[in-house]
Amino acid sequence: MVNLMVLLLPLVGIALLRLYENELIRRTESELIAQAACIRAVYSDRLVRFLRQEDPSAMVTGDWAAFYQPAVTPKLHPPVVDAGHVFMPIEASLDIHAGPVRLPAPPARAPTQPSDPSAIQAGAEVSAMLQEIQSVTLAGIRIVDCNGTVVATSRGELGQSLLDREEVARALAGENVSLFRKRVFDQAMPPVASISRGNRVRVFVALPVVHDGRVLGAVVLSRTPLDIIKALYINRAYLLKGAVIMIGAMVLISLLTTLLISRPITALTAQAGNISSGKQGSAGPLKKPGTYEVDLLSHAFSNMAVSLRERADYIQNFASHVSHEFKTPLASMGGTVELLRDHFDAMSPGEREKFMRNMAQDIDRLTLLVSRLLELARADTFTPSQETLELCAALGTLVTRYAQSGLAITLCPCSPPLPVRFSAETLESVIGNLIANSRLHGGDAVAIMISAGVSDEDSAMAEIVFSDTGPGISAANIDKIFTPFFTTARDRGGSGLGLPIIRALVRAHKGDIVCLPADGGARFKITLVRQTRDRDL
Image (cartoon, rainbow, N blue to C red; front, side, top):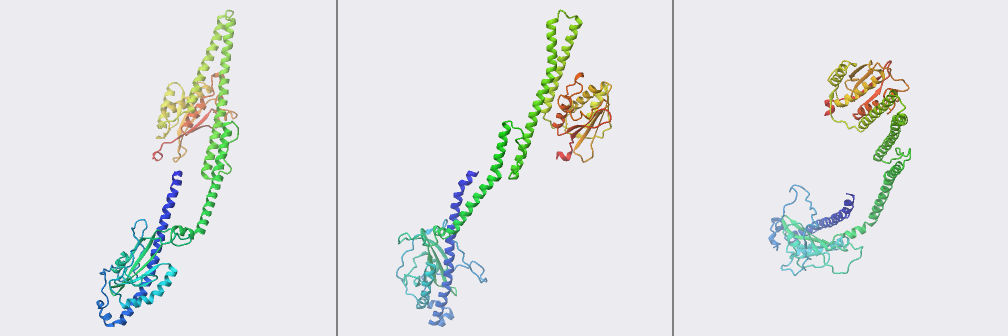
């Protein structure tokens, strides 16, 4: 997208230059229209005054035929605004990219009819004014009578007929005319300071001189519009200032980009390199992130680095504990095998049975340990389903099943419905592990009590409280019980993986488990996400 935008920039520049060129032409057209309107008003006043002096009675009766036999039949166009409105503006309408460009104007020819003396007199009075106007505006000015004969001019063609020119014929028909004609280069290319340098067209404007509904003549003006190269040359100081400002803005944007984006990204790249090389404490939120998005990226990167470090420490400690847990029974089995190999014949049947029983116990311990490790691995990578269950009903089913097997277990009254985002299979695994842990430490006579509910009706979490009448957990060990392989019942077959498995399963469902202080026995609280209709929506 950026490359496409860069590619389009020259095209946009060309389009803007074309618009600017057209505006220059319309500005020329507007100036010519304004000059023509003023000249028309002055000439019309002079002409009507001379006509009144020549034959006042004809002017009063409106007998214009006594003065004029026009070569073009007038067809006055209605004004562009309401007749009762005092203003009748003439809008600039030329478009160099859409309108046709006529051939150069044909040369003037001899008139076929003589000009009216009043028109000649009026033209003579304004001729000096036309020359002065041309010296300032550089516009060629012609005033023709109703037959197209030039009666006043800024330079040349006086007394000649321009009736063959389209703009003159249309103006004598009562139409306001604006058009292009090809420019004839009769001299060498002018200098860059010339207003007409490089322009290939000339703008012609013709306005009819109308009085009392009669076309008395026309005012014709022409000028080469300001060339776009010349316009740029005239405004070169402003363009240079604009270019300097744009370059300065681009430099400033580049510096800001470097400070706000490039440097923070470079710092994050360096942190990534340090992490990959194994340097500790090399990642953390940037002190000067520059932008909000980079700050978010920095914190996300820092959290990821912390998670990776914790995961690496966990794997290292886990491997160390696994090695230790496997080493003890393997060493015992190795010693037993060596004793049996060296002294098998000298041993009594009772001694051989004792050593074989020890090996069987070690094998059972290793089998249990492998099974627990697989459970923990599945729990750490567990992907929860979108299943829901009614907590009170599911706990009631489990408690009934365990009570029928002879376990002293009770469920406190629960107020259904209490739907949670949890599967029945996972709930059975969590409760089963807690019961196994209670029986391991408290024996078969241990009593268990379970309750479920919410802290308040608006709470997003449901709570399960599990308590037993076992020996409880000491204050020194309460922070260690969720550490893998930590157990105080290793001599009774404890692996130290039951509670870590439970916590991994619960946290996978966005819940948690904590150990609560209790006067006697162990007490755990499990929180699970509630499933409500509002949250579903």
